[in-house]
Amino acid sequence: MAVASRRRFRPGRLVASVVAILVALIWVFPVYWMLNSSLLPNTVLTSTTPRFWPWGGSLDNFAAVFAEGSFWPALGMSVAITLTTVVFCLLFAFLAALAISRFKFRGRASFVLAVLFIQMLPAEGLFIAQYKLMSSLNLLNTVIGVSILYVAAVVPFTIWMLRGFVAGVPMELEEAAMVDGLSRTQAFFRITFPLLAPGLVAASGANGAFRSGDGRNLTCRQLQVGVRLGLPSGQAVAAAIRARPLEPERIASGHDGRQARRHGLHRETPLWYYVLKEAEQLHDGQRLGPVGATIVAETLLGIIEADRDSYLATRPDWRPDLPAAVPGTFTLRDLLAFTGDINPLGDG
Image (cartoon, rainbow, N blue to C red):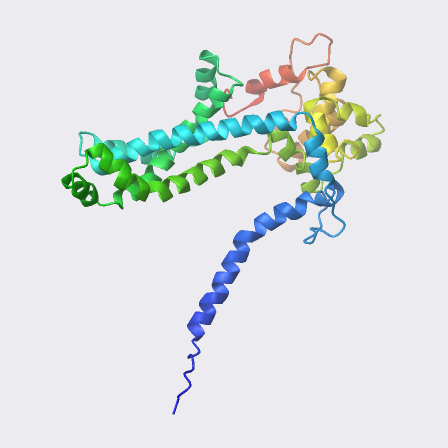
């Protein structure tokens, strides 16, 4: 008599499956959100209410990007920088990982610790030195210069990543191949290198992901700040103080202006961007316009009122003494240079 076998119900397996599905959804959601956002119009993207489904979406955003003349050259430059970074980073990191995993040499431990500590350095602390170095080599705004900086940034992490893969391949495999008549080089490329290929692919993906982190430039990222914070637009402030607002065409001028137009922000402009654009268009960037000056004045008055121990509050008779071309007027550069004289904490 045949006995029907039944699979036992295991609650632990069910819980593990549910957790695995949730983790997978968490990892997939950013990809879905990126695709969903690419199909929605800019007015929806800048709204404070998220839309999780692309109802009413279109391919207009893709058409606008592909039609822009600067897209394809920018894409080609990004591909060139990424490929250059990945190739040279893998070359240098792979050789270093082989050295620290396969050989004993003086200073090996110090080198490994140095590679680890380099990753802890804040990138912001290196900007000035990197700029001066690239400027002295005439590599500013070049593919080679940017690639060198990217390679230097990701090599330490890649060394540690590949070191684990290299250490996982036993030396006995190469020794056995050499016993069978292969040279050390032949044993490495025929036996060891194929086993390390998955690690090289993983490191390539990690380096490419690091390179793609700067895909949106500063202008494109920061244009959204005012909308997300719920600040009034520059045009609204101009109307409130009865000042003539900048025309949309003037806000949309220049490279950054094209970014503003693309996101539909040249008519309702984030306040901080409007202040900068107003100074650029009205005073060639040397002086704040009416909206910017009003915001700065009200901010200073608010600080003084909130903090009665502030420098200006304790010295209400203070007046700036600057070499102004016209009495009573001061450029933004003059005020910044004068900061040290009104800073009670030091010379900064």
